[in-house]
Length: 63
Ligand SMILES: [Zn+2]
Image (cartoon, rainbow, N blue to C red; front, side, top):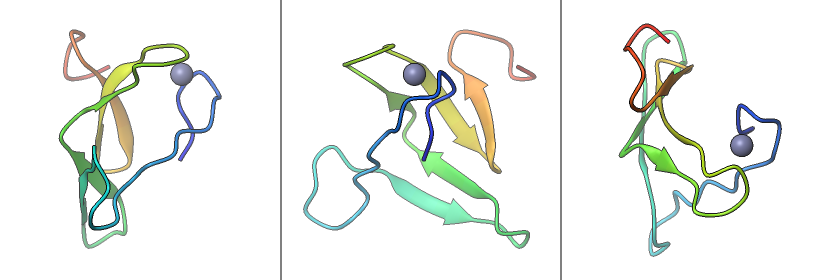
């Protein structure tokens, strides 16, 4: 996936990878990730992906 800043994020969601995320895809094919994405390199973004939308941690849920 792409980070909001434009960098590529390698999402390690396959079994055995750490850290890893759980992905739920809704009926419209929009992914939701758990837990939040917190990059410890690059831009250090911390956000949620909910129903295919970026939600910044610490910001309002409507971001
Ligand atoms: Zn970024």
